[in-house]
Image 1: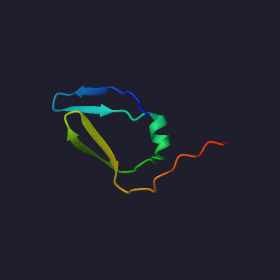
Image 2: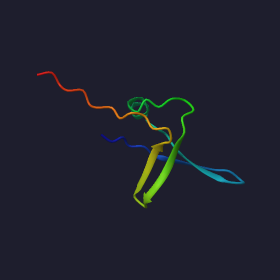
Image 3: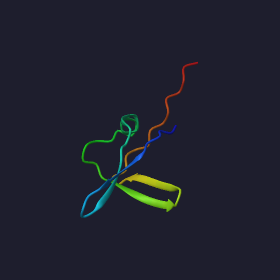
Image 4: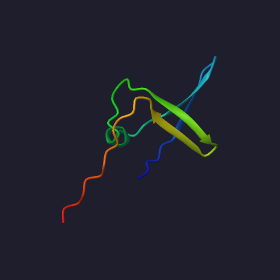
Length: 66
């Protein structure tokens, strides 16, 4: 499952910043809480990973009823 997002760039007289918005559906699916810490990992010029610093147990997809 993938979600599209656009990068925002803000230029100020003294610096510039880039912002990425995390879709609510992604945050909810990952049970992200306010104040949690994540890190960005650059794999290559086409892949940027977003990793939670305090790992949680992986969830297993629920089985469909027969």
